[in-house]
Length: 306
Ligand code: MN
Ligand code: MN
Image (cartoon, rainbow, N blue to C red; front, side, top):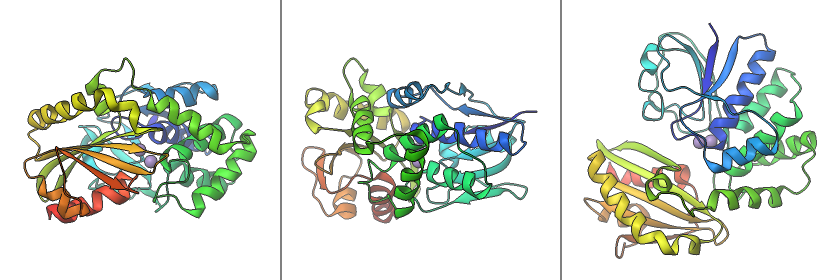
């Protein structure tokens, strides 16, 4: 049976392009494998696939009885609900090690770099497989997206080195220009339902035994959401109730000013002060220089909740 490779729930560009690229590599290494996604693509991912003429993976939400590879996550909360009934062949990721476990040995590539596609591009090199032009293009975009055009605290020299290598293969000359183009697509909020914006890049966590949801909107200018900020704040309050969470946060990240306005819905707002040293006012806090959920939001919050 064909194995499937997929990224996390609410797929982002790294999860989509990482799945496509790993499936391409594994196929060339002789495996019967296809890419999948756990949900509909966001506008940025659609833009990227269209730009390089790559077909979107099939949406698959149930994996019981399947052989699978995970990319861009190793957390059960980000995985399909029936992952326990799947046979995990491998994980390629760049997050902290999650709580996924296996009953058999697996192939594992987890590096502390800015993007899963940086690891996958390195795997192509390791296995001495040529990277097709279109795959190089979408992996390049995934790295620019995950590293916020190299500005994120998660970006490493390895990410930059791999980007230069991929840019050469796909003939892309202006990486900052390409990055801004993508983030403009990502920033577009007009006509999008509020809940969809909250969920665009949203993840659930358990911190100190409490449910915590954290969403992020990366914007080329914070003013883009001026008109809907009150609705976003209201909606994360509603979402917190629906999920029975202790807290739901929405990061409004200004990638040009390099900072994040944190919208807060919490049973105890003092966790924000504890985690970031900033006192919230009216359910908001400005976190200067903070752009990365993974590196600058989750670790201090986990400490504050512990
Ligand atoms: Mn991701
Ligand atoms: Mn990623």
